[in-house]
Image (cartoon, rainbow, N blue to C red; front, side, top):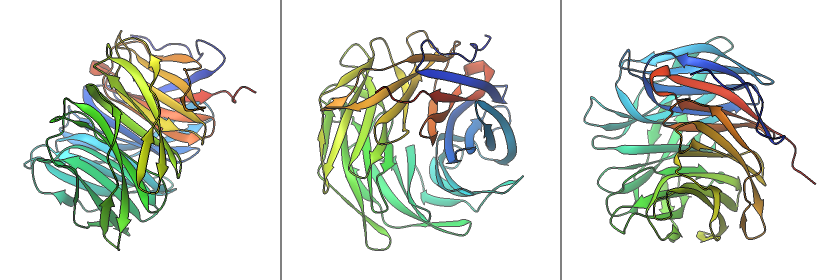
Length: 363
């Protein structure tokens, strides 16, 4: 189907030009911004059975595809994070290698993109990988094997190493795991508790020593079936988690997470989409503003603008259809205080990306 014109449904959100990364079937796109004018997106390319990555060059509301890199692996559950203006990490499950959990360093030059050596952080049965940076040389990767685990990744040039894993959930996990770095020493991981009626929960993950991690107290974020969670840090002490509330008509809901040391307190839920919501991805643009993108009840890719309010997350201000056709997985990444890049699996039309611009906050 044709893309919508680059205008929003109101004065709050607008969408720029759309770029097709691959025009055939592809899965699990994940985007990471390097600065306000450059991002990287990686995905599983069905046509070539390979991990593919490509630079996105952004100018205002326009985005074009730049340098590309690939690896001849069939992958799934792709996740990315930017470390600095020339370096990112991509993690994924290697589908043809006993579902091993693997990460690579991505190095971005002026006109080049290259993948570093593969680092296997879990030898088999990994799933639902999520990675987030702590600083320019460290990141946290979280995943499921027989339980929920996280590891600290350390970057040295183009190589990666990891420490011992910590179990943040000692039972099976179903649906998405999402991790967001808060500062150089802490992150928040959110997940679905399959052995506890699929309730949603989050907890703080902290660096312990040079290679280890430790865990804070678990906090419930939705005492009902919760899927497609995505968490984004607003600042070192606050984050927003959004999800599909399957126990509440599958509406899209969000909670504010406030951190005190290693303990989290979740606010009352707020609804950002009062219809079926799937494949949620959120990005914080500043300490007050969040963009939440997702598949709506019609299947279209939609983004909402949310604010940090008194005691929780505000009702959405603005709702923008980014792509009107059928979509699945989404990934949104902050470019600056007023812009993000969103990439999504447009089913048979492959992976598409565009810039979403956010108007200044109202007085």
